[in-house]
Image 1 (cartoon, rainbow, N blue to C red):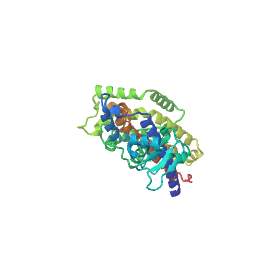
Image 2 (cartoon, rainbow, N blue to C red; image 1 turned 120 degrees about the horizontal axis):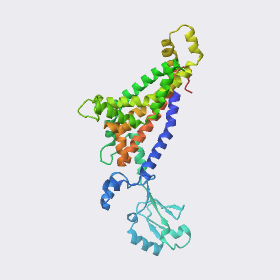
Image 3 (cartoon, rainbow, N blue to C red; image 1 turned 120 degrees about the vertical axis):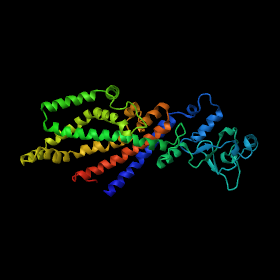
Image 4 (cartoon, helix red, strand yellow; image 1 turned 45 degrees about the vertical axis):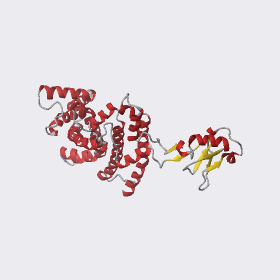
Length: 386
């Protein structure tokens, strides 16, 4: 198993690099320059330059290379042009190499600051525009900073100049307080009912449950939220309509958790019912009943145990989404979780926050996909990790 885990971890290296490259292209290149968004339309050039420098937007995109500017020539631009016309010489201050014409490079001798360009081409040069020189910036580029910040989980500041890492940590608690009971309740109810309706398959109870599940899946998620807020919070006044900071967080998340259970029960129940029906048709179930085992023992000890592979897949791969919260529920109920943070970042075009959330989501999916494979071998000895 150790070799399998190490091999899978090595496979994640190109995946993580691809995620970082994709998020950089989406949020940096395609997203545009956000310095104007931060400074405003009426900002002067100096303010724009300061913001670009603060967020590292004035650095090269991928490779830390940039053309030599006027200060890198020994006597300045005017002297260089005059010298080039008179003696055909290029004088460099602190460069060890230069490129003259495309794909043509040469190295200066040690301590040499001048080179006769005519010696390179064995002919006179008619234009100094052919001279192209570059200097290295030690990988100090936007993508390199994007890469190192992601690996160290130092995502920098958002558009409001708040630490993104702190905002994410503050949102984890409220999101888990909402999604954990919602997920646990949905899982317990759907698996229990799936076992029961699979046992009485084809009966009126089974048909009724299937019809209710399909109807629940057909109702938009937003309709559950509006109905729950209006009926249970406004009409009956059983729950607060909006998040109340002064009260216990469990009071504020009770209603959205119940709404989440009701909205997700139909799809989960249909999925687990299909899984249980496949197991109920197996020979070992008939053998267990023939031995005189009780229905409860057969369903919960034998059928449920052998149906753990698809259950584990559905459960473990849902955990990353629990950590990142529920976008609609948190937004409508004002819960300050990661889902609400994501909505705020989308509305304000805060690509720094969106980039961090996307990267964390991808890492969670990679980790819990690996845990899913490990759990397969743990619950079913027939599965080997090769």
